[in-house]
Image 1 (cartoon, rainbow, N blue to C red):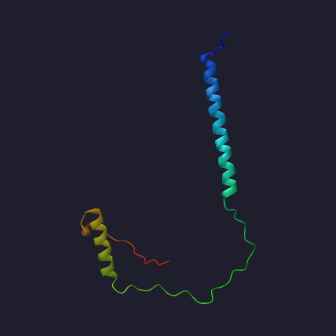
Image 2 (cartoon, helix red, strand yellow; image 1 turned 30 degrees about the horizontal axis):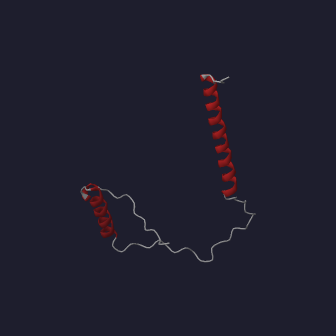
Image 3 (cartoon, helix red, strand yellow; image 1 turned 45 degrees about the vertical axis):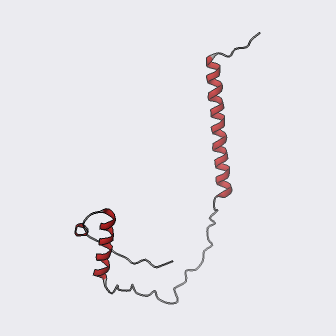
Length: 97
């Protein structure tokens, strides 16, 4: 006697297997997130200490206009347009890490 599954039983089995597989994948992701996530402990109440030395004032750039012209020219060259079309609103110098 041949046992043949009807089409709706195949659909239900397929959907059930996919549902179980996705549920296991979600469970695995949650477990891995808990294992590998950094636990941020709240710091105890530590007194805020005043800085011993005041932070140095922002250094003035000696040739600011020249530096801005160089930056505008570099941007214009990379975009393939004219530097006269740029207006640099702010320019801050980053400290090297």
